[in-house]
Image (cartoon, rainbow, N blue to C red; front, side, top):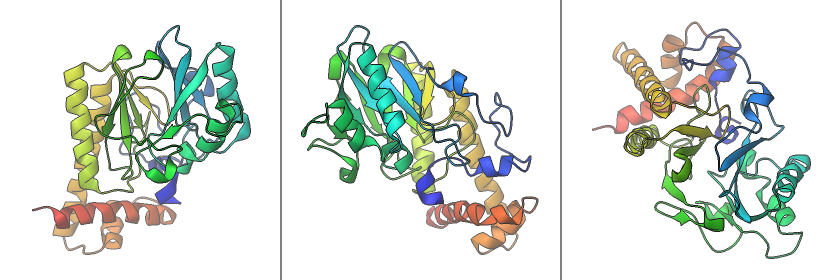
Amino acid sequence: MWRLAGTSVLRHLETLGWNPVRHPDRASGRMGDMSEIDGMGTERATCVLAPNPSAMTLDGTNTWIIGEPGAEEVVVVDPGPKDGKHLRRVADLVAGQGRRVGLVLLTHGHPDHSAGAAKFAELAGGGKGGGVKVRALDPAHRLGDEGLGEGDVVTTGGLELRIMETPGHSDDSLTFWLPADRAVLTGDTVLGYGTTVLEGKLGDYLSSLDRLRAFSADQDAAVILPGHGPKLDDPLAALDHYIDHRRERLAQVEAAVAAGARTAREVVEVVYADVDKSLWPAAEWSVQSQLDYLNERP
């Protein structure tokens, strides 16, 4: 479950009143109000919140409708789970604006983001075969021949959406840059609050965070539009928080190893000593990725 879910193990820790990586502008342990997430966004990007809240998906999956003002075509990012009411709602919102879906993009292939993509493409295409295409880094999640990767630029409906590969949360994680709104769509690489579970390598994730931080500073990014949780209006502060947390946790693991811990379980017993033991399996899996990183580091 941890490998597929795609959000924050620390949501479980928050239920115990313990969250050492609490985002500075979010109250610990509470879910956001649907009203503050559903419909949020920028001039070109609007969030449609999927009705799949849980400890692993936070308030639910953020589906993004993105289009140039006045354009006839829009792009939909992360249609979300295979929930018919949600998929129909997204399609109806687009149609209600007198527009059509020209393309579906996936930030990554975890099912809370991608499971509904094929059904949504069918709905958006009027139920006809060969309708709306789905582009993703992983070929397993594509509909059509065209993939999606580093340096690609999506121009559907006159839009400019630039693609960056940002592995770590998953090997196929992508980040989208919407320059007209100075907005970064991060999928699960950066969340609206909490921290993300890593399926990929920690080294890759740290590199992705460093890259996003440098890119956001260089481009004067105004907002992060995440795959879960509310938007973040101070991208540099959010990225600094993520980077600092990962470095601090890595230092704690390194200190535990220096004190004699040899396995992930032994590290967890030290670093997570004050956490309910029922949560240790999740912590152990996360610690293992850090041990792998320390072992691989020159």
